[in-house]
Image 1 (cartoon, helix red, strand yellow):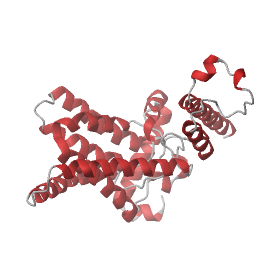
Image 2: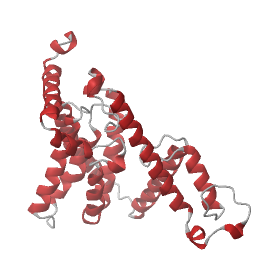
Image 3: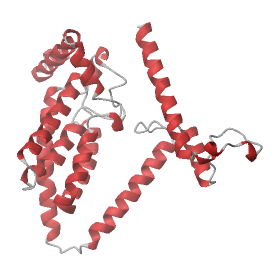
Image 4: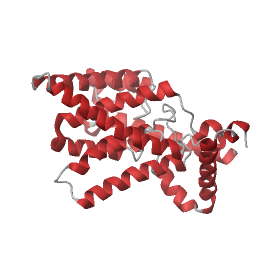
Length: 284
């Protein structure tokens, strides 16, 4: 065991748990396949996406206070991650690294998913319309998300538990800020204006992110994004191939819009990614 681990009891205990999980992967391959299928470097294919479905479903019940609490905590946890710069298990041992399951943009603490799980799910426990069965399902989602992060070596157990506590603190601080703003009697339409500005800013950031070919949410490369966007702007439903005679286009081709070809290119890109992963595993 490295000397740095030996001088830090908490780190040493975390590493023992992570290595034990690593051995369980060999003993229980079926469980490993299931848990790996729940995690992905792409946010739209990860189990944490369930949290945002819960957020959308509970927003009508909890109102703008809930929305701003979640948004504020999301920005705060991103900032804290880059301030703390905490390492993950895969940063100590490269054998634990699974590229297809690991989001390279996150740090160890606070855990983004575990923190936001408490911020999103926590207030739902105090909503009368939420049944005990629904609350139990939400709790299971929170625990499962934390478990998958430890299983694939993305987080230490202590980081997951500590992130749950930071989530509780985040909810309390968010509520205190809300009640403080109420004392200033801010007009109600400010919420709607700020929400529209937030949505516009998020759409702009996503567009520039994809345009720089850095988007791991939908995996659209820059060339594909530019080509499809130009087709949409010009009202052309072709797939980008040069066509000299418009009479050669079949009715079925004319009905296909640019979104169709975008989806086809994304599927082809995903197949190539899976093929490269299989080739890498075969060579290793």
